[in-house]
Amino acid sequence: MSNLIPAIKVKNLSFYYSTSKAIEAISMDIYQNHITAIIGPSGCGKSTFIKTLNRISELEGPVKVEGCVEFFGQNIYDPRINSNKLRRQIGMVFQKPNPFTMSIYENVAYGVKIAMRRPQAEFDEIVESALKDAALWDEVKDKLNKSALGLSGGQQQRLCIARALAVKPKILLMDEPCSALDPIATMKVEELLHSLRSQLTIAIVTHNMQQAARISDFTAFFSTDESRIGQMVEFGATEQIFNNPLDPRTRDYISGRFG
Image (cartoon, rainbow, N blue to C red; front, side, top):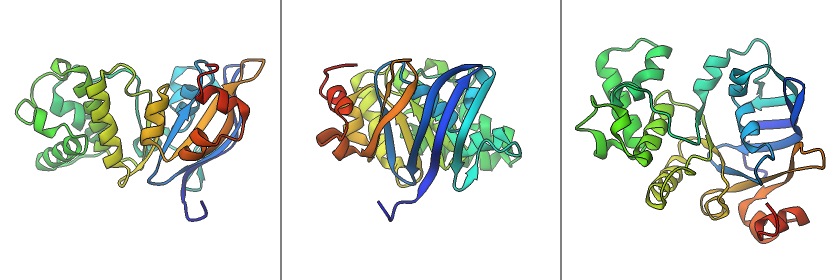
């Protein structure tokens, strides 16, 4: 692993919603241009953890952070960090597709228009490029001015991915992006993630063991202790985690004995 470059370094991270601790003492690297899967039973802090990586958790209420999260060497919880700019560099796609109530075109262009002024022709290029990157262009190129809400669930999720890609993030965080999709739509999203790996770094929370094994390079297994606080039990190359886990709790979860 010596030749791998960490895009994010998590160091002894504990996170609280108000005074309630949700995750404790997590340390791991998320490597550039690789896919990292985060697996574990419900309530173990997977979604909370991924939301700490671009500070979107702060939008849900008062939080407290101990430890640090370094994004290419800079602590994202430094008070001088602009959280809006950070979230453009570390994008996020949620469990349920959440297109805006506007056209397909405006959905993709929205974040770019907020971030910067560009000539209309440049927006056209950005929208087309993002939709192509999200493997959606051929399906929607003739209806860009129609409501995004008319798309299927799988198309809506790929539109949300295109929206995130339009602002050219360095990292894409995904919180169970396929849980509301049928198998065919899931396959399209997985194929998309494989194609995006060369462009950016991806971290994905998933309940689907087969999906984690199929698409990821590295896997982190989270669980809870007796006080129900989320902790990382084991982290390593996906092949090692699934075929030769070091911790018996990981082995039990992978084999379906608990969780």
